Length: 443
Ligand SMILES: NC(=O)c1ccc[n+]([C@@H]2O[C@H](COP(=O)([O-])OP(=O)(O)OC[C@H]3O[C@@H](n4cnc5c(N)ncnc54)[C@H](O)[C@@H]3O)[C@@H](O)[C@H]2O)c1
Ligand SMILES: *[C@@H]1O[C@H](CO)[C@@H](O)[C@H](O)[C@H]1NC(C)=O
Image (cartoon, rainbow, N blue to C red):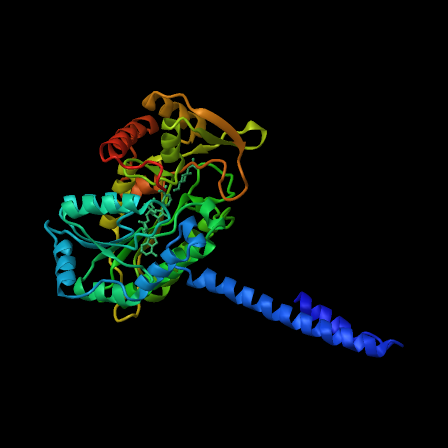
């Protein structure tokens, strides 16, 4: 380190006539360097501590106020789960009501996609138990309202973190899950520069932890999990096919999803876990995520605020393959239905197991400017467009899915175009934020 270099340089200082004076200032310098070194060591250790032991709670406010993260860190160790009443609720929620139904553990069940998938599974008679840590990356009251929705449908969401081994083990003790739908993750591309640790915590450490428990479970469940279209990163070949290169992620978020795909390969290879990764392409719809453009454009347009519209170099269009939530749900259910059993038992592989990756997109990229025009028509307000250069901090210029593999293997066929889907989103948005008197600006 810099200080060390300076010290060794001083060590080799030649003797001079002013030796005594030199020695004094040398020792003072050394002492000074020593305290500086100690100081920076503390800073360094502090940073490591923050990075690795930070709680999943990840709102920008918690960096200012340490209380929320302390609270949720504590809840990772001694959360409120357990006890006979709790087990009864878990069992009731996991009850299968249809012939050939499955019992599914849905992680991230209070999230946007998790809520829709849980509700759809429950509707058709499968047993569903949710798991979510309700972190405050975005307004947790939205997650609580989704939870209430699922509660009414008969789905219990266990409150806890996927990094909590004891909790996961307990869940597998109480229910012999045949499937895991793993949707819990730290999402968002730009937020990764603010809170990189939360991506490592949920998308890497949490995923490994979940797989560890799954591989030990008897029977081992089949696992379907959410990767992301962002793994295509700087890939320029369109449309994106599953075989294209995915080794140039443009954000830490993308890198953690790519890591997840490699980790999935390992657990499939060593333990015989059946694993299906789904690369979602910009999912939108009712109960969506407030950190996504279509959502905060709607909020800000209604408030008369200007919205940032990104433009690539040379006025290039930024486009997204927007995929409506109902189409994504169908793809998730078809993945669960076609997932083969895991082959291992007792933590050991017994034979080769299924390993799949699918694009789930809409196959028609739409320029973000068209998204705004659609919203203008639906909201009947004119947007104040603030054209900005696309920053090089994670967002790519366009995404476009080749879905022929999912079409063939899953019968996946998206059927909602952007305008029709936005219409349903806007209807939900207006009723949710006006009827309940909810504050749309709460993050
Ligand atoms: N929505 C999209 O456009 C999109 C696109 C590509 C991939 N994905 C992926 O799909 C999945 C679902 O996304 P979403 O849009 O519903 O996001 P979301 O943030 O609404 O849902 C994720 C849920 O997981 C929970 N969670 C996060 N970390 C957790 C942890 N350590 N333990 C327990 N729970 C935890 C959160 O509280 C949240 O409710 C994620 O894996 C995401 O990366 C989403
Ligand atoms: C789409 O992917 C399939 C493989 O799944 C490939 O055969 C086909 O050529 C791809 N289509 C395009 C237009 O790239």
